[in-house]
Image (cartoon, rainbow, N blue to C red; front, side):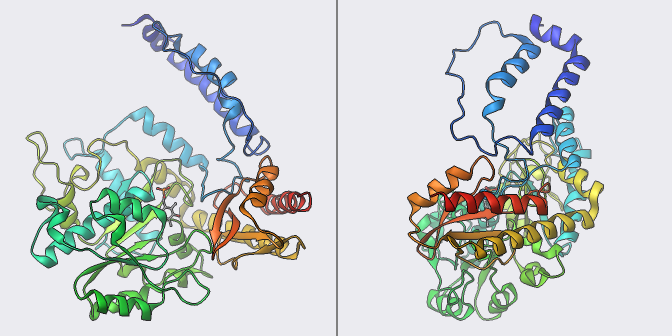
Length: 461
Ligand SMILES: *Cc1c(COP(=O)(O)O)cnc(C)c1O
């Protein structure tokens, strides 16, 4: 054995203790470290060392040279994109995932598969889905959208008497993917799947809204004159608007289409009695995308995808090999997901759901919504700022009352970045900033502190 490996193996308990202390030190400082340090220096590129330095020195070097430049994206005031943190139980589950280093892809080594199926069953309960929705863990919502749309592609093939999985996407001819406000990852998925970004057909939205107009969707379906894919949105990133899922699903009685719902973070509205109506009809979808590294607050990389047609899913993702079992009634995950080998990705979610239950997840969701409301009210009252969209759930989309240029907004965001991190957007043609509440640590005090930082930066522009 390489001498550094042998030494590290001998000293493993002490070394892991040192890593644990380092992790605790980082987490203790998390709420107060600069949220994002835009000027942080990182070490210059260095060549690969022949000998290596062993874990102890690598840890020291990393801690001194790299860790100070990392953002506090796991902390309470990082509101850019839609970013979750990691609950204590999720973090423990993630550490143990690497410790056990299991590959739950096959029933040849079954415990990992059973744990993933148990966790999927809990997630179905959380979001009000029935057993007809088969699921699998994937690395993020982009991969979940891609997987759902891959099954949709195979469904289109079934309607037309061809199999894109066997013959290629060209066998489908022109494909139409109809959506009101699709997330950017949908275009990426269509590119990967060989359907092409141009397959997206923009459908009119309700006046002043990001939700699709069901009447316009009906017209688009009638004009398409053949089977289509509809991507419905449950929680858009700017104004957290929701398509009327029940109304959209009802259109399937008159038009043939696959209904995919992107509920990456919006699906969590199901947890809050005040907001659950927003996702009414989610269970009617043919495929569903839900991110877990956002609002469930498990570490990256984690999302779930659900579909009603695991048979079509296996047609797309099956990995026929002599060393793998036949497909069978319940296909192994190796036949259902883009990856073959994968980590026991369900474990952090298992831990957080077991530790905190439905109530714990609901409390996080409701506290985030309350924080967004507090910030929204404070910004609304600030003379230099205005809300660009109503605060529907957990995102505050705001802009400058005067001269809302992208440049001035970037200056505002940059000036506040040590205290709060927000990201730019364009909403209804106007440059704006978004503050997305999805971290389990964020408190009401944080919301006030965030408001002070943003209003102060706007006043100083
Ligand atoms: C974040 C997000 C995605 C993409 O998720 P990743 O986890 O970054 O891949 C897709 N759709 C919506 C609505 C999102 O908010």
